[in-house]
Image (cartoon, rainbow, N blue to C red; front, side, top):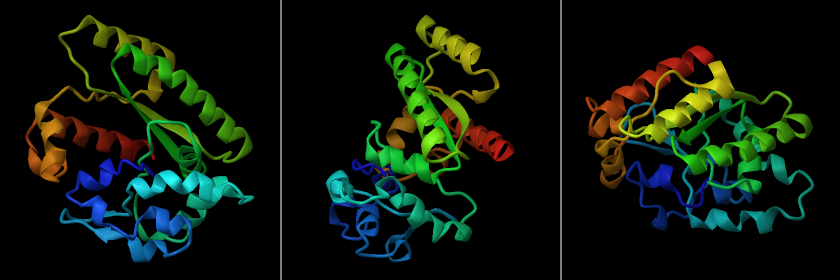
Length: 215
């Protein structure tokens, strides 16, 4: 659900050549099944996005249930998958609201930096509003601390503040700053394939273990 399409390009997909994406599904040109792509990595499929998705807000303006379009789409396929992860854009517009209406839970990735800490307050407010008015079953699955640099006091302070405020909602595993994590998307591979023994890959593997216990 991100017009930047990073989750798609990060798996080696040329998003600029796609004409079957989540955008076409949401405007009902194609079904989700027609647009889902298998990936080289085992047991992973993707419903890709590209910049076309940025125009969705205009397309949905006149729809009465404009916030539930993604939910309708995912309800038609959710029984075919163990997990469906929805990648959201870095804003709180209609694309993110659609994602929150369709989701069972929210994982908030939080960089261990000051401005990221400021932004989480607004996001929590939006989640609360969606819970009250659009999706009562939505829960905060967890806060995932990322880009952690153990050499800086700021990173340590952010971790301490977040754990104090969110308590057991914070994943125990912290994702460190890691060069291999930055390199992997440029090779069109996940970190699990590109550098499975790197600190970043090991950390994400632990996050998955925690996630399966929470869901």
